[in-house]
Picture 1 (cartoon, rainbow, N blue to C red):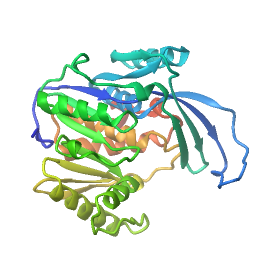
Picture 2 (picture 1 turned 90 degrees about the horizontal axis):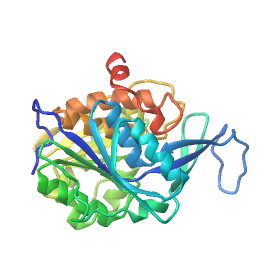
Picture 3 (picture 1 turned 60 degrees about the horizontal axis):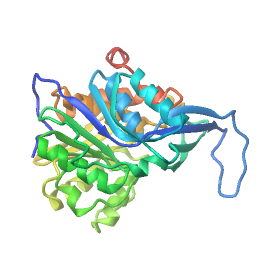
Length: 324
């Protein structure tokens, strides 16, 4: 298994296999309850999708990035491809398919909280097959999320493992991991809610409720839960649990859990914050940083992203993170 704590002088690429969406966003004073109608701002349009968000984050972190995914043969697909090219992302792995480009409907409250409904569209057509090689090497990082078919994720992780690359899976939005996937993951990234769902699905006797107002309890729970998963699933290298304003906890095989604290900021829009952290983490690993060092930068980057509106467009540059 590739060591997620590796450190070296050779920088690799980040190859993202994931989704691309057009984000349609409305800001509101407060998120509506079930059955309630609220007035909001004018509709805005932005580039998004977990795959594209994470690719942009990694590119702005300074990594060489390629994205593999699917867009529609429509104006939205052409626009997203152009957006990625402007971010210096290799788009040769993007396919055009005969269904509409993926779309996300996003509502953002005054406190930065959000609700998101995704119409996957072309993302459901994403495939990874021998006829579509990922061109990975042993110093590269393969990064996936769960907004594309599980079969494509499994094939991508297997290709990464075969190439000796570091494999990173952000299991968001949550769906139960297939047995074949667990042993292919070097670093698993989940948030509090996804961790709770994962514990429930795996029938672990670890309490699934995390209390965000009791920081020591949250941190200890995250580490205990991650350790249980690591012990139960041989081959899995490390788990990163993102905890919003509390930062994150990283737990690796035979390595004590480490808390990387968050930063106290006023959030404007939390859409894409987890993608920012994950993209920056992948860029750090591709640059030869160890897991903890990569997360130090990633947490700073995420704290900057939530102070801006938008998803892909909110990702900070390396200069901004270094100066923060």
